[in-house]
Image 1 (cartoon, each protein chain N blue to C red):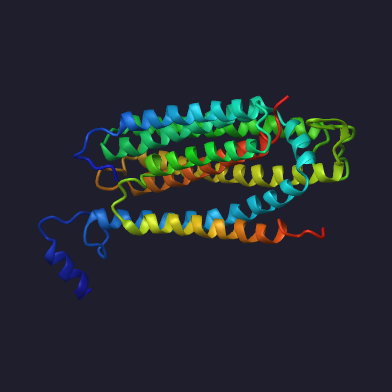
Image 2: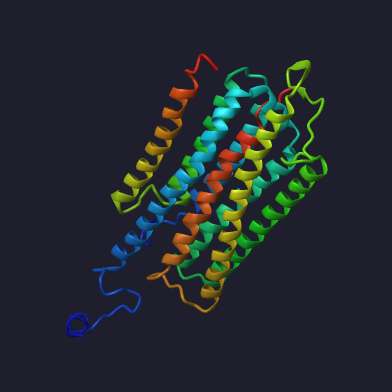
Amino acid sequence: MSGHSKSSPLPTYVAVFFALLVGTGLTVFAASVDLGKYNAAVALTIASIKATLVALFFMHIKGASEKLTKLVVVAALFFLLLLLGLTMTDYATRLWS
Amino acid sequence: MSDSSIVTGLHAEAHDPALLHHFAEPQQQRDAASLGMWVFLATEVMFFGGLFCAYLVYRLKYFGDFGAASKSINLTLGATNTVVLICSSLTVVLAVWAAQTARRTLLIGSLAITMLLGMVFLGIKAVEYKDKFEEHHVPGVSFSFDKVEIPGHPGQYANPSHAQLFFSLYFVMTGLHALHMIIGLGIFLWLLIMAWKGRFTPEYYTPVEIGGLYWHFVDIVWIYLFPLLYLIDRHP
């Protein structure tokens, strides 16, 4: 809830929109440069920044009046990392296959 | 009956028709609805998470083959679709803001443009799928990925069955995403009809806010799908 009494949220929305466009251009450009094993890290970092911008400003996580909402977001990310992380502790350490 | 008459009695002077009787105030009602949506989105994170997990495992195992297969997808179409979705996310926040501030024309216009952009996205996706069908890159009996060089390894060819794994993940992940887009279009059509009928006010615009959350979530999924599927190994 970006409340009624506060100033207009439109400048923020437009700024986030342009940041997302720049991020898209940047990720396409970064993929055309040989960064070795860091290509994937750069792509995922840009994607995560874009996703965070969408969640914070477009989905109103920043300024959400209910703290439980933030807890649900953190819980979702936690279980996603648990899923990916624990799977990789298995696959990434299978030296025999 | 007696309960409701007490409630009506208490709020007799200023009863808000949009406020359900088990909520104390509109803000609490809005928070409850958006919390419920976020819980649903958390289950969606796990839903897509399983696919991302399968993708991660096989990408690490068959990196070269995945790179070769990824290079065969049309990057221009994928990047255009990313921009289309970002534009649609902007029109969605505009729609929510318009509903909050009682701007009916802007609300209806934003919802309609969002739907238009969603259909453009699906149209571009259809062109992309058509290319894949014509190139025999669809997993199945007619799949063929012969003599495709692994990026950065001249003279070394990708293993077709590993490339087929990439395309299976590509079609399931983008297909599931496209299904979410189609459902989103249905939700936005309903929002458009409700907005047209004048059902949303600054006191009650929860469906616009909730539908917006869904649309942004689908956008976030694409923000990850784009680099993971289209940009694995693009450099010369």
